[in-house]
Length: 479
Image (cartoon, rainbow, N blue to C red):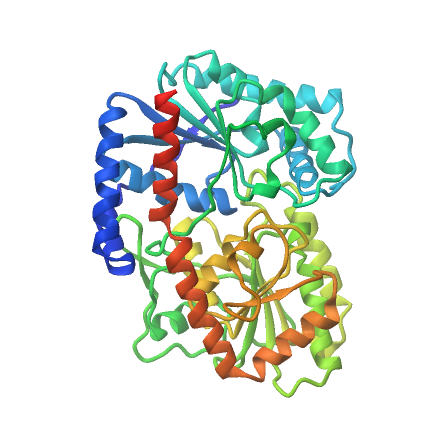
């Protein structure tokens, strides 16, 4: 029997945003929150997805639920469970909506049977807690099939799709055809970009809400240079010793002190990079669409170009056994390791493959925070991307970013103004050229980083995300 799991989230105060967006903006947001709280007395807003660890959806849900609870609205987060066969089908759907074939397995009646059987068990348990008048936000293909059963409880059902493709092809059409029967009774749809909205959802019920980051989370909070260096030395991502004022610490979401205690599992040839070695860093899941292999091969071309600056590369992702809804992780990681072993000795010495511990999610986030803040360049060379929160995170930290001009990354970076876009993600020669240009022009890199942080402050922080949700909820309640 499958079971739902509730993710416990600490209450967070909206007041903390005053120091990053100003008092007037927070005051107006609090007034809107008060009106919404009055309308939702004795009702619950449910968020349902497929994992509490790894990926942008889980990253966003934690703070958004926390801030919503902080203004007195009963908001909760449930995670469905599923079999390996179920997550194989949903990963195939994930690729399809990105316009990719994945492993090519058919989205046929057998796949539908697996999908529906798993969700039927989850829906049975959901029906015991969801009440008439509640609002349920379902996230991504894994949960879309719950919509008909939830509609039967009298709840108001919203489906949010965090992925998509700008130009639909046969694979995307196949994915939407699979999902279409479950979406007929959904009251509203949320997408990250207008181009992601398929015909079946494009009839006045879709809204565009861009994702966001939490500026105060353990992944994005300010860290001192001593803390950054201590964390990276301790985890084995840079060479020691730690600074005299060693500091493993960060603030947890509940305000209590945290400490990075675990170490990364790193595949490398020799020693960790020295502290003063410039690092090119990509942090992402071990997912074929994140193209870790392409990043490694593109980085290798830096040395064919005889770039004057000699950086090292860190490819970092979660421990591959820790993300329940991503069955491809272990396979992709092994492919990257195999390709790394085939590199010339001198290149292998400059490439580090890091599996980051995820037993403690906030500890993992603090490690990512330190690594991104230390990076000379953060890259996100995805082949497809729903939005790309790792780009937002790096921009908030004032880092120069080189990223593919795909999906929502295009909504974040204005090429040459607050980052650099790689127009063709498969063009490894140009990728290497862009890296070399930034490494050799630190003043320009600093300018890009400063502009990037301001861009995030203006458009991609959680407070504006919450205002968009509030507007949607008021419209649903008025229908």
